[in-house]
Length: 404
Ligand code: SF4
Image 1 (cartoon, rainbow, N blue to C red):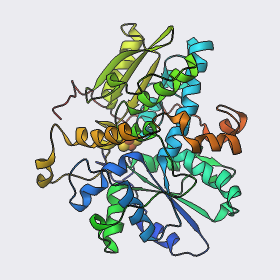
Image 2: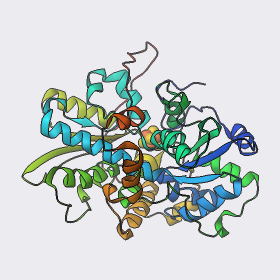
Image 3: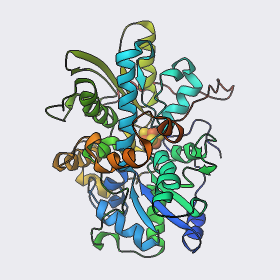
Image 4: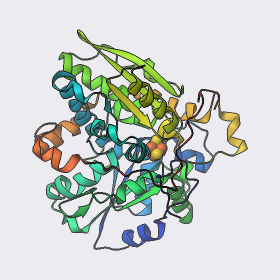
């Protein structure tokens, strides 16, 4: 059945594209690139019996290469790019258009569709920046195609994503550039695991391999997108530089972390303070928006993820068996998120604007953030969808917290 509200928990199934992806891989006239969302690097190991919270980016790349994809890209690179565009949107609004605050994150299609149905009055507040996988799609068929001399009509972009809502997002009519779909097929983590099993790859014993140029280097900020609060933390790291001119002394913004359903906080950016909100689960977003409307809460920037825990808790992620629970400390979402934060902590580059690939994309193609070219390829629009008579609004979660 077709999921009306871009079901984030996959309780309604959407179309699988495994057969179509095998077909394009075996078509020698196609240049098939695959991109992996940040959260997949810490979840797919579970499908092959590895402990919850295993960071397996190297094996994931190796597996995709053995499946026959021509290039293996990290969506984390365009997550960094999303931060540059969204961080500049935030700066513009803070400095020049305070009436357009709060800025609301827009990289979760489950949340975007919820806002389109239930909070159309907030649509002008949604960041117009496309989500990372759509950006990667747009860039592969423009900048990358030109740079490597590949006919864009032969490029197929396959995205490995944490949820079925991303399939719906990829099919939105506005997600195309120069007449090409940005992303052609979306597979969930579980669907990719099925493909790996179909050809009998021994995932656990694969060597670690590197992502392919030019979508290969990414910051810790790009990775933590996979956890609730991660997008906001990444944006704050860059907004600090944009607004104050100086780097944030410590990139960690602890108030954004953890699994409380709704978090409010403040960030000091030089002599300016911005107020923030982070919600996961649309029920918590509803609470925050209602509090904003009634004047009970004020915030300048809000991140919303439709799934509990953010993308590490996405509906397309591995489903845990009782065996897995012996590895878990607080909750599986917590363990998966911790794995992302640990890798971020160990990275030399932890801020999106320091990512050399992002700098290269601006230099060779986009010019600068929010430029005419950037707006053309990396920004999108939203539509008011109204309340369908058979659409039932989510019940707000009451106090989603660490226990889950
Ligand atoms: Fe998909 Fe992540 Fe949004 Fe869940 S939180 S619907 S996994 S994008």
